[in-house]
Image (cartoon, rainbow, N blue to C red):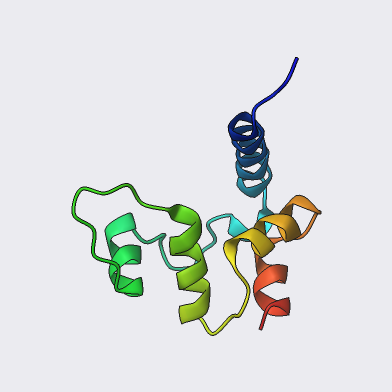
Length: 94
């Protein structure tokens, strides 16, 4: 059985989201700010959409750049899939 490239990406994304959901550094803690909405994130990057799909990988890469990081969403995904946490990635990608 041959799995399409699109299906492989879908499976990998599902695995990534599962690992991300278990990341202890993302658990809501007292004193932490609330998660921003998608429109707020789009405004932060200067992205203007008119009923277009949002490329979340590109949006996240732009947000990383706004934070002064040279890393992209693909690098973050690989880091987390290899056992790292979001906090560790943010600290090492500076």
